[in-house]
Amino acid sequence: MTPSYAVIGNPIEHSRSPLIHRAFARQLGIELIYDRLWAPIDGFAEAVAAFREHGGRGMNVTVPFKLEAYDLAEQRSERADRALAANTLVFPDSTSDPVLADNTDGVGLINDLAFHGVTLTGSRVLILGAGGATRGVLAPLLDQGPQEILIANRNPDRAYGLVEEFNDTAGACRLHGCPLEGIEDTRFDVVINATPASLSAQLPPLPDTLIGDRTLAYDMAYGPGPTVFMSWAEARGAVRTLDGMGMLVEQAAESFLLWHGQRPDTAPVRNLLRDDIRRTTEAADTD
Ligand code: NDP
Image 1: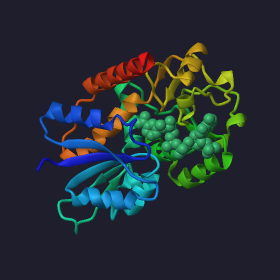
Image 2: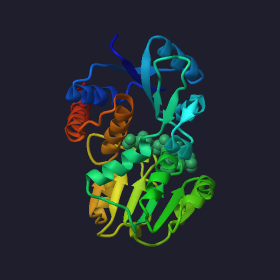
Image 3: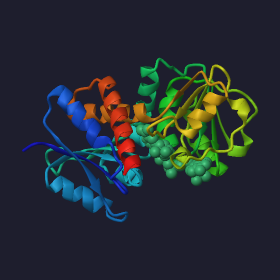
């Protein structure tokens, strides 16, 4: 039987994971089925059980089920433990063996930065947002040895909460939090937008002084062209702007490695994905 994989979420129809995983599989000559799986908000565990019963071997997990995926697993990677959330589930052959949960979002971001030749050692990093994505990337970001990470969030208590939780692993890094309106009047080397604001063409209230001519502006959101955050940063002289498409491909490559023991080459799949998003946006615009 051809091994079966899926990405589960609600909503799920927008997910590009099938395109990415099918492309990885073609590249490495691996036969698999990879589909989208919609689950009701209160039906995650049932949907996972049914998928496993039908021979499912692994799942990617997206909004809003990453915390439930972590809770459901009987065995968790250190990355999942540090994020308290999982985006990847590995189902063993036997239903009596434990389900493994992992979180590849953080390493996806780091690998995407590395793909673009960016390392964070000694850098001053600002993260906008304190939700699941920030939680997932904080430990791998800290592992890079930045000089400072400031988490700014609309609800500052969530930023302070993350700081408290991760402070004991921050080492020499100055890890601190603030409200979005309270960001210090200074330039950062890297500004990461980990809010979904760009998806609705919104920009968090940000001081112009954040961006200098050495600043990399990174938006975890992505679309057919530069996001509003990327355009804003570019207009203020950012040396480079990147969107989250590369992170998406890199986190998928790490899941693929877990399931199949082989790491695909992400470069051609990045191009494939960008073309696909451009094409589907153009098609929607002409409808
Ligand atoms: P969450 O819903 O868990 O958190 C969202 C965060 O953004 C919260 O801190 C929230 O603040 C803040 N926020 C939401 N809307 C606004 C706004 N209009 N202005 C300012 N702040 C806002 O989402 P995630 O952390 O899971 O995801 C964040 C983004 O990252 C999404 O766009 C998601 O698609 C993207 N992402 C991309 C990935 C990739 O591979 N490229 C992987 C994972 C995520 P508050 O706490 O005050 O509500």
